[in-house]
Length: 326
Image 1 (cartoon, rainbow, N blue to C red):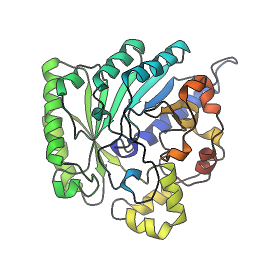
Image 2: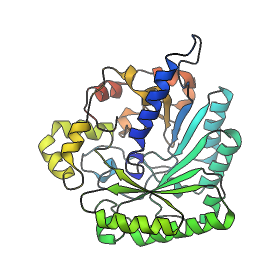
Image 3: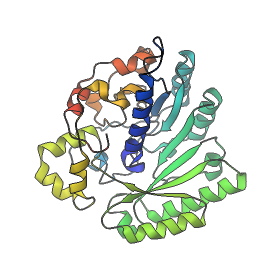
């Protein structure tokens, strides 16, 4: 499941944090690192996804195209981490997942351990739908700083309205198992449930909060929105149809009120701070870009500090498009 639905609200809060860092950076002495002055945010896609959530571009409502399937191997992941180390780029956070489900990758715990050993100061965060947890102890003991779990209901009827293909009973059982493993192993890993704020699930949100409090899990009731740059472009082209569709999930008046454009790509803090890498080592402009046609070439063909300066057509489209999470 994508970052945009598994961690809805994360992007907007991240944007505020990075904008603050950018503002502070303008006062730095000349000669300071022009990019990543507060550390890079690295987003690594290590797997495909097993769900087709309705509010995610993978759900198909926009007709967007990204049919690529694959799994990042351990060797490639090591090379990615080692490149940041070799080029002395500080990594502020490393996210596992973009439009995929990281726990599908059997090498996930080993990847976390390797990243922790090479990038000890980086926060390691996974975004998951938690439908496929095979070894709770391995995850809890991996060194992961936080796992953020996407949830939108406590009954199958409510949950499946968005999480198409998932079983909420499995997710709840996996949450309990992961919490038990964390306690048993005295792991410092934080487990957070990001409960989607939809029009129809307020009663289930109360039940989810009670479940989380009883299991030592952080509960966050999180605003959802029109996700992906391309999804927002599609919305602008067919406002009437998509307003009706999204209106069954979220407050569209609030969504439209919060949406805004940017003056230029240079004003985008995600472009300035983020490096988003697909499972085969190719670059996305950022974690808000979905379609394969907007990939930018190999991560290994670029000096990391030059990645934010790569000219990208999707950036020129994005800045002209009203988007609420930016």
